[in-house]
Image (cartoon, rainbow, N blue to C red; front, side):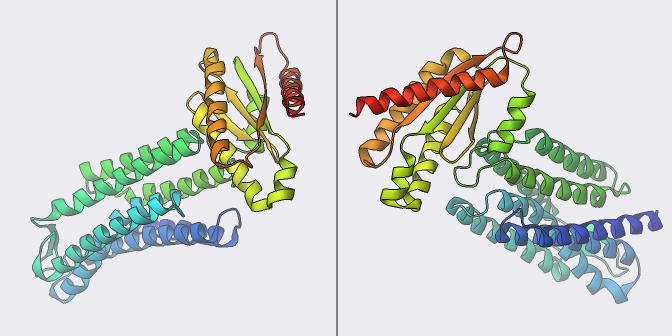
Length: 363
């Protein structure tokens, strides 16, 4: 068991080192997120080494008591950090995230202080005169910190899933199940040391999940992008409503007000589309000023949802008189009778008729 366990830790360290190199050399994600992933992988590696060190020092006599205690304090400080570190990656950059993370950092610092105070005072754990480790009266604080860490990650993941319209939800669910199975097995039988197999695997899958989100998301509007749209359209096999949107006279916005205002316009349109349709379908930015909504459910509500969108756009135009109108075309698709390319063309033609009527009304 000792050789097997040691090899498990070695593989954990190698996998985390490889992931650090992958993250550092890649450019798909921002510099801030790259650094946070490297910290996440580093903490996983440090916690694994600390647990291994504690196992090696178990029962080795009085000369190792202090070192054993410091190693266990390091391990028990690191493990609750993993959930907030992952959650911080998902919510990086937002003001709300920064405020929450400050509070979480204080809680993690308090837990770390408690763990290191346990070395001399035996609060959450005790390492006795023979260097044998055991739990102490306040060990429940550490367990609570671990549960809170996982809960924090689950809540953050749910919010991000909503923001990204459920992109890769299944992978995120599998990651959570993997962590729970691994930690649950070790909790039921401490001799089954599988946590440092499951946690590195979960960390690597989490990186894949995050990169997949980035690859399928338009960075300006935070809607799904053309890549995701093409994948959805070419693989669809169920009835749906296809709504095509185009911002009228968008070039004039850029020419008259500048590209910063143009970007604000696109972000605003994306936000209004998400607010009106996201609960019933998926919203995409498919071109410079072109958007699309694919609705698979509640097809009878398309007209009501479209009214909501255009009413919201009218409200925005009251405060931002430069905000342009948006033209829309719609067509239903039935895989039993329709060709998706023809349906897209029909929706496009309807959108241009809509645009022509609006432009005619302005003359």
